[in-house]
Image 1 (tube, rainbow, N blue to C red):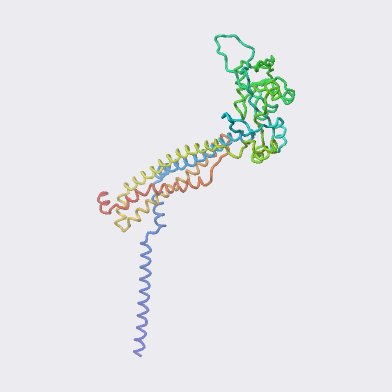
Image 2 (cartoon, helix red, strand yellow; image 1 turned 180 degrees about the vertical axis):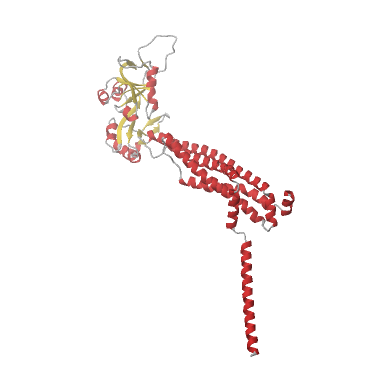
Length: 438
């Protein structure tokens, strides 16, 4: 019997020892877990400290808000403005097609055409789908370079240089998008009959001192009188014609032996340029398509692309400058915070916080400030682009990745700006900090 009780007492003692050991291990784990300073604790500590100073938070975030907002807004303005500029450049270019004979170098060194267009080129082009109107235009060279009106003998006024002379078919103004200032334009009937009528570009009319046509004025071209039927202005294409006198091709063939119609020009529907580039030479010279050169819109013009690139560069430079200023603001405020909290840092170091934990808190604070500023700044930048576009009646253009990138960039700026102050805080010794704060 005593042996039984002795054995039972040993088992109870061992079980009590196991329970005490398990309890001690659990308590040790709880203590270790309590002493551990994890990432969640780091974020909580950083956000609590940021929220405890709302005034400073607002002032610090403002730098990043302005920087990111300016960057997003300027990129949006650049893309929107470039889109508007491209539209203006392409409005005329995308609706006109030009066909001209190719040129080769002759023995004398001058450039000569290798072919000639047919006189009925406008009619052939108008049969193509996508062509709204067509005309031919050719410069006319006079043996005697004289284009005059009724002579005015005034020794005090120098004789003006005569304007240039062009021959064109009846649809020239409609094709080039010209506007009649006074009078009318000649038509296909004048061209077919070879009538001696003329239109004056507005600058040529000023040079010839003609501002009205109701008195049936005439202009003398190479000594031949032509009745002026109208004055035009504001051409979408071939702006040099505004400085010239324009007569029908029939009259030019009759009086000045015009050999070929020069260039053929067509006003086309937007988007039909690529197909008409292939079809126009076949319509005008089916047996010699290689002798014709076609200038048709293929997309955005090189000039528009260059302007868009220049606008983007200017706005991006401005945005980066403002963003750097915002980053410097975060760095300055974080450095000031480290100086003000030297005593707190020393006390925490004395209580067991490591330098990595101290540095991590300041880095997280800077990232949170930068992220918050980037988020608010991106939103304000998008609203600014939308507001200006609505006021100007533009179509807003902004890549969605710009707004998202602005938020991420704010966090990156905060990380970069808080790195140096955080490193400085991690190197503060407890004794020095507490002694200096005493």
